[in-house]
Structures are given as C-alpha cells and as structure tokens.
Amino acid sequence: MRRRTLHLLALLLSMIAGVAAAETVVQRENVRYEYARVLRVTPVYQTLTATSMEQQCDDGSKISRVVGAVRNAIKRERGVNCRVVPVEHQFRRPIAYDVDYTYRGAKYRSRLADDPGHLLRIRISVMPAP
View (spheres, rainbow, N blue to C red):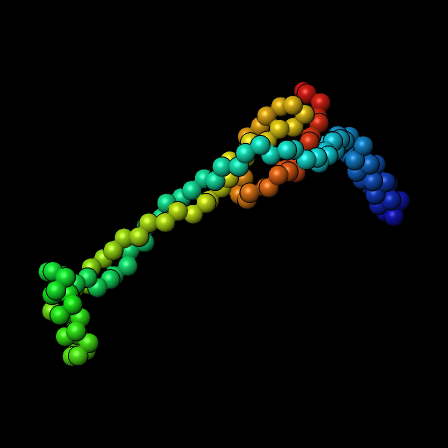
C-alpha cells in the first residue's frame, strides 16, 4: 500500500512538472520614457449654471431711489416693491486640456487631465508585430 502511494505521488509530481514546462513564456514589453516638446495647450471648458435666490426691488426714478434709501435708513425697513427672485449665474471651469506636442519630428495631440507645461513625459513601447 505504501509503495502504491509513493508511485501515485511520483506520477502526480511528473504531471505537474509537465504542465509547468508546457506554459508559454510571455516576453515583457520593451518600455522607456522620454520627453516631448509641447507646442500648444488648449483648455477644454465645461459651462456650469448655478441658481441663487436674490432680493430684487423695483424703484421708479433716481429721486424715488434716494428718497427710498433715506426712508429705509431711518425706518430700517425694506421697500414695499421688493421680492425674492431666482438669478442664474454661469461660470466656466477647465475639465481637460488638448495638448499638441512633437516627438522626433512627428506631431501628436492628446487630451490630458492636467496642463503639462513645456515638456510632456511620454511612454515609448516597442513590441513585435503579430
């Protein structure tokens, strides 16, 4: 019985070694990093709209505005023709940057999350074609 167990164990180990030998070895990718010269950076903007509630008062003429301001200062009251209205404010914010750059005489364009400045670190990869 012990001999049979050893024989099965040896058979199992030889099968595992055969599977390991049959695996394909994948060559690591040849990669290096260099710098490209940036030609132009163009921000890509997103336009956002925010709404806030603001008080708006209707005043007739300049004289009535002056009289109303004096009256409000004395009485510390607001004018009777005031109401709260929604006012939209638009603002733009950069969400990306279109970057034109040159490397070894060729021009490229990429959209990046940040402005790279004058030099852009690039990844050079070489692999055999299938």
